[in-house]
Image 1 (spheres, one colour):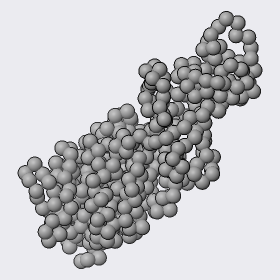
Image 2 (spheres, one colour; image 1 turned 180 degrees about the vertical axis):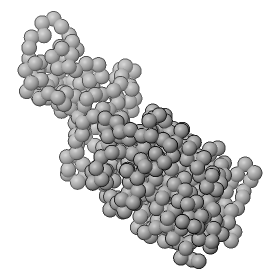
Image 3 (cartoon, helix red, strand yellow; image 1 turned 45 degrees about the horizontal axis):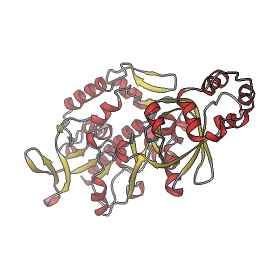
Image 4 (cartoon, helix red, strand yellow; image 1 turned 135 degrees about the vertical axis):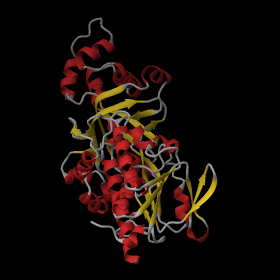
Length: 416
């Protein structure tokens, strides 16, 4: 398809070189529009690369409806974006870069080499071939005179004139990689409706573990374990998986999967009382019967390990959270199945894997253009949505970047 000559005279600035910004640049370049990507860091895609160090979970292979349910209250507004460019389309796009993928046992999708670097290298090579230009160490500072974008650069303040702008500057987690949320008060000052930025996929703090527990078991995995609690709406939330005991509280994949309702309940109530089942594969009655067998001269720790499969950090947690329940088999069994832990705070936003909040969809039109700022589009974690880890975050970032790029194309076409 030949490019529109009028569009070829346009130039669009993409602020932010993460997946959303790069996908917007690719979409614009495919329409024949000159795209310039600006990033505050020395190179683009830094958070993307770091996220892939342990294995780049690019998307998830579960069916579409369960996939969409992961986006909670923002499912309706994200549905058209992900229907147009969802998990299957993203995998095909990755394959088009010469990167093969596979589906893991948990239905998570990974590149065959597991790492993000080969994918990013291939992508940047293709973008440059299509004429996309990159400007690193350019920190966006808003608009200057006559509507030009203003950047702080190693060479000083520089202005850039663009016909449209896509903002994809990330949320407010991992600020050292560029996504520090500094844009939020600035956009709010321009009359844009911005929801407060909050931690997502984050750890939680307790009032304080004992020094013994921290010294001996900080960083120890809790597996398998089931976590349950009643959220602020009175719904029981429960999930089984693996957590990690930290010096401040708990984190890990199980906690991240429940972090949104945990955080919201914490904000509403000031604390969250959760229950840990330390032996999800056994009933309370079976545990009580096993623990009632004679101990003879063995220690309680050995008895728990032999009769209930409880040892290490789980035994320490029983002493920490239910010391009065250890004397009798029945109360000990109940403590194993219903161990109370009170969470009092989230870990700091900058430590979170991702952030919630951002530019509300109600402030955007269907093409992701900011209604208060014509010609300015938003994508990625800047938008007010969240999802658990497991490929859902990246998939929506790619999809929203594509949608913002398409929105910019359509807006420029309408002006010609």
